[in-house]
Length: 450
Image 1 (cartoon, rainbow, N blue to C red):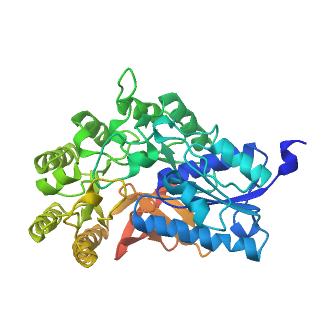
Image 2: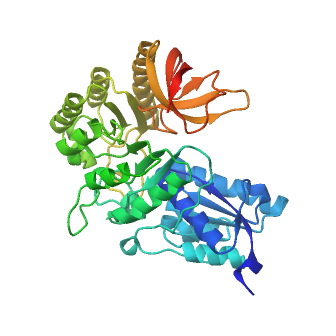
Image 3: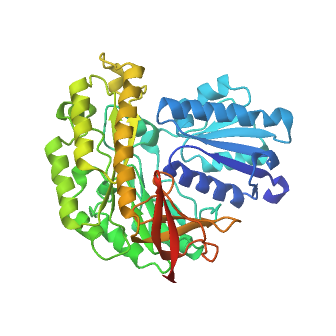
């Protein structure tokens, strides 16, 4: 028999971060190479793969609930098997198989061949298939699967993390930091561009550390320059910049006239020195202020997106107020806030001075309300201005959904163009902002496009 005799229809349910989504695309490409067909809904699949997230408690709960929900299709429909992959299975695959009756197998990072074999044979496994994190190599699979017609795509430039932040379990799930070779990234970027992707969004655990583990010790700038040469790519967005490693040369490159956007995704997590030290962030408030000043000096157009954690063990009301004042003074262009989540196998979970959930949520709401006021005021100030946008989609009613250079998909705001029927997905065009609706902007198209 040939592989095609075992052809199965599969559906991959993506959960978690963009890095996890890229892994799911590699899984799909491997399954296609084994002779199986991707389908758009779980109801029409023979096999469903849930690509889980294990980052924080809420993400774990969502992963388990989705497995249970989709597992019901085994009782109600044609679904034959349901498998789990991703970060949660890397940590708890055996427990998941033992405790979730609907689950037919669990696969850790990099187990693409084993996953393809299980789907082919419709196996039910009693043990998870995973590799020790210290042995994990960089995960890729030839030309990855492209499941959508969006004008952007995430592309991983490294995996793993060498930092030991006391709240984060990622090193235990993803292993040591492993930069991906430049030629491998460029080949995938060219493939994405050939398939209509205009914006490349570079993701990793820490982009600013890219290349440090190579013998030649390269930085990320040579990679950005190679990607800049690719025909069809218009925007390059760089995510996850650690403030400690954000140096002047990279700031100047991102602020210069090239395809890399002046979008500084800089997770700061806090501003109080004591909290930063307990988090083991390897940066203090003085360094944070210095890096923000360097960005502002490099470009008046620079956009800073950041994230903060509130309710970290031991965070006093005074320390929270310091963070609040910092946010009020800094007026970040984009900002997210998380309530601290105690994660097993991290140092912070053992700290005795844990903060009550109610206090965490109160602080989160207070900080997000402050940022909402900042964001709404900034949007109102944009009314009447001309902005360059990329068109992500156009619906049947002729409404176009777009983003400015200052906005990353999935996490930032959108520009709604009510009469954009003549616009096509992937078009980069100029629009006039006519209104603001909370976090989103309203606009009308101008004539000049590219």
